[in-house]
Length: 538
Image (cartoon, rainbow, N blue to C red; front, top):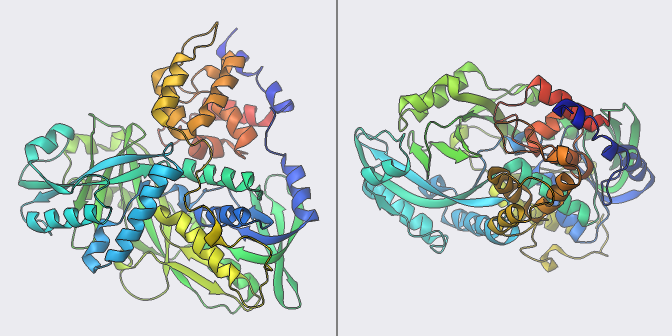
């Protein structure tokens, strides 16, 4: 039987979902429309997801909706870093860096060690550059001190040693290399695991559900009217309190509450490129461009991630995209420290752009603080935007504290204060990824081929212990153990898992955010068609 035809036998799995599968969209819409929720969170980026998670943990009845996919916009268009913010030391924000380090280490060590991994950074110091070796050496030492030296001691390294670890490092006029440690992640996977955590805590969630209007009771916002973008069905949700966490669209929703609402934010566009690597990279590069900006070259998902830009954006958030000017800027800035052969445009597999939400006001966006903006409208709707991926748990707790102290106690008082919640509650699937990968390799099905090593590592570092459920699915249906594309580690069982357990509705949901096929440049028309068939149960 051909590969095409074996995959066509799989959708029977979708007719009879496995035990523990998510409810269908029709069932979820009915659930949302028939209950009154304590909190309706509009916006499924990481800020809204984190707030929903913490609110559900507190015992509140929580609903979360998003017009697109979870983490479908800025939250899956970041630099994929959990970091303390080295550049903030320049502005004297020592306390902020220390707080960021605390959150970074909590996420990467206790909350999601299966989704985050440590990354060594090399900061090259070139002759004529914006910073000298002594200054950067002292800076990385202070930076590591603020994380209690948990990632080693920041220090200076010889250009020759750095070039051994990063063969594409440009060594002409290279005086020294400063070394420090941070962490990186797959942001879309981290967000989806947090959605799962919110649901496991009792939240009801629905993606691809657009708010078409707000509900009011005696002048107060008490819910929202929605339209299922996939089916066209219209429904509504009642809530005691509505939280607007729509990121770049936050002011759009505020104007639904009050047509005269003044702008509260401004937007900054950040573009990135993903390239195939020409050699192994054992460290990342963080190259100073000027006094305030750094450009990154990050080994990520077996590829190279370059970026980012930082320029004011005034268009429709839905239209943000990478243009040729962005590509040229990113490659030109990367050329400060990377040899030309790695920067060939033919190596680019994907380009993406996101929008940073910054406090309203004048000034260069690159110098603006990444603060969280919280406003309360005249109808009682609370709007929150901004912040950093690194501090997503802290932002969720901060919003909850704000909700608990609102005048008139709209949420009541019969729930757990956020201060009483566990400080480092782990995300689903928490496990040692190396141990998971080892188990996947040695637990060979009988009869059946052994799982490929790269697939085992991929599953372990994107699902943690949940990888065993995906492997079981592949063992029970061997056709699901086949690779989606020969040049990527993903297998077809992940598509079925995304459909039944991760709210995937469209090929883009699967290929861009549940897997890495799109960013690898491997989301071919054939792959998309097969994914669509699995999602539709054909």
